[in-house]
Length: 160
Ligand SMILES: [Fe+2]
Image (cartoon, rainbow, N blue to C red; front, side, top):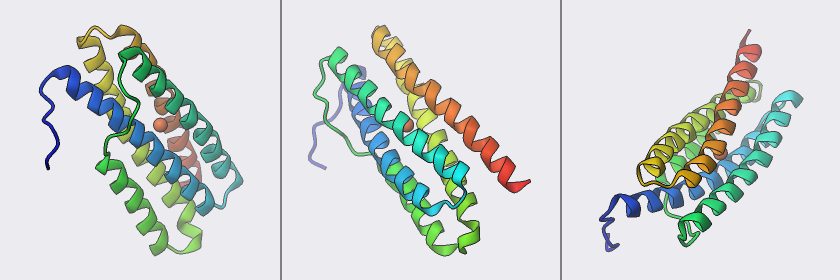
């Protein structure tokens, strides 16, 4: 790796916000794949709705970049590449009748990763005195938390 080291908490934070942008793009790709894999109309609707929210989250991150005066470029997010790959490989492995549950479980795992990412970013933003950025990141966290609850209840309903 020949990249420059991140030396300060601010540089680290900015890099992580750029990774979060990649994370949201991965979410959009994953939601698209999960929506195509799912059969149940209620579940596909949930994925469509969250894809719309994910586009809003990308816009919100772009506002964060503007506030921080940081170039809105992406940084790698190998964890969400992995989450996406895990979903794809499991979808390939299962019989068609199990796809709904795989889609919901994969989406739930992705949401929990996103929740942890935003929780950390919000704390970092507050520590750096970037209160407005923290408030914007909180909006995304609230959406992710709400989505994870919807996914959990859809999964519960499917399995009961
Ligand atoms: Fe998201």
